[in-house]
Length: 109
Image (spheres, rainbow, N blue to C red):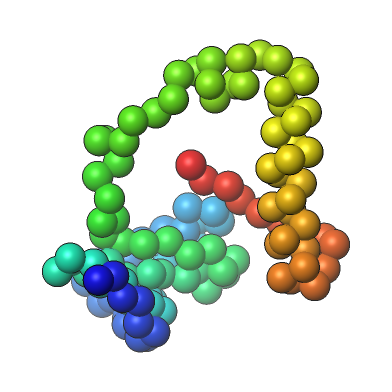
C-alpha cells in the first residue's frame, strides 16, 4: 500500500536543479513508498516547486491519446465546453482552497 511520510532529508551525494527556476535543490521534505520502492519529494528553496526523484512510474509505457483527441478534434465548440465544464471548475476549486482569486499554476502532463 502506498505511503507518504514527512521526512527532511538532505541529499549530500546528488544536487538537482529546479525544473521551474533552475535553482539548486538537495533537500527532500517527503518520502513516498510504494511496492517496496522509495521516491523522495524535493522542494525548491527558491520558488517552492516540488518534484519526485526517482520517478516510480515508467512513463515510456503510458498510452497517449491521438493528437486529434488532445486538440479536441479542432472544434471550437468542444474546446469551449471543456473550458467551461472542466477547467473553470478546477480553477474555482483551487481559488477556494487558496482563498484567493489570483494564483499561478503549472500543469505538467
